[in-house]
Length: 539
Length: 46
Image 1 (cartoon, rainbow over the protein chains, first blue to last red):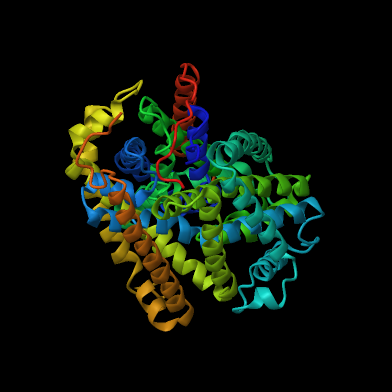
Image 2: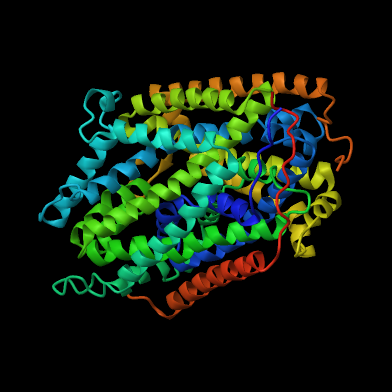
């Protein structure tokens, strides 16, 4: 027997969940998504998705997690088994571990890019010099290609020009160390420091960006007002396009960490009388503050002010383009650019580490729970597993295909599927009345009746439509306006051996996790635990 | 394309909404007492 893990305070768990949610997507993906999908008008489907999907499913996850913890479970599959009342839900629930683990395979790599960029800016920048902007953008792209090794598979291991492997090593050691320290001394401690630091850095950078005015008087159209206009002026015709609604729902899901398997694990360490309703709302609101108030005002505005609308438009379609190719050029032009570059990438690194820790934690809890081993052993096993997956993504770096495949299927598609499974189990199998009563245990505020209706009927339907739209939009080939064909994910899987290998890795990982569910289920039954949720909690 | 009137409205409403919601939530969280944590035993770990 060993002392159970737990949070040292309510603020701790809120900051940990918010830290998990706030990541690169808040600062890079959101502004790009908004600019591409109707500008200010994007906020209409975005807030609809927040109200009808993000917050209700988030509340369901918080409630499921705390209830599972009261029954002695901390892993997503076991808790899904309680709410789905059977083995099927436990096996479907394997996605709540597959998602954080597989996303970790590439996320920790991106995290180490942020650390490397932070170090580079601290020590003099990435060497863009005083060339014309187009040449600087090209130099920035070349630097990014060298850092990521995206020219060819294995490039990173043959010619690691910028020392990424060292930064990866540092990032990995930090991750494993903090997860091994446990919840309150590890994850909670990091988030308690990192979240206020990120907010402070974000506000400093925001103040700087909003006071840039017209940085180059020779180019009067490149100014802050035009930058804000580019992102926020509404284009209502975008609302007629189904893609805008799917993009908004995807952004909310990706951003809030709903369906990631993290909230359910973190909430399982809460006490019976801890308030899950206010905690869930606070964590979501914090994430929205970082995304809308900071991400929505900083990134694109600065890019337009220094590089103009045409150059910014090229970058908004990709988070990596915006974050790692365009912004370094912005910092090269900004007064005190190296200072702002350093703190900006430090903020991204902190955003990434608070998220990556939250990805290891559910896997570690699941391994510990299913095998009945110590935290040290579980951490060791999860580290080896995560390292093997990351080594695959690092080696198959050509065109970032391996990373892209895992990100698309696991980080974008499976989270929607598991979100649907969770809200279905919560509202339809466990029962909405029981679920809401459980959520209200210890809560200072009530979930409004309208939202209860939304949780039961609107969220599952909305999510099913989004999943259908996502498949319709992303899987088949698509013809661009210029007549060229944009390959869908089906074609990519047929034609690209790296994509097929990435699928093999995902299948192998899933099989490993299913085996652990199988072993765990037998152990839990042998221990006399109520694995199918037939009885109320003993407390 | 400078920020137009509707752009201002969308930006201010969105930013104010998330900022005020965050401040309201934290004021509620920080304004209430919570029980000190009690150590308990875990039944799964070896």
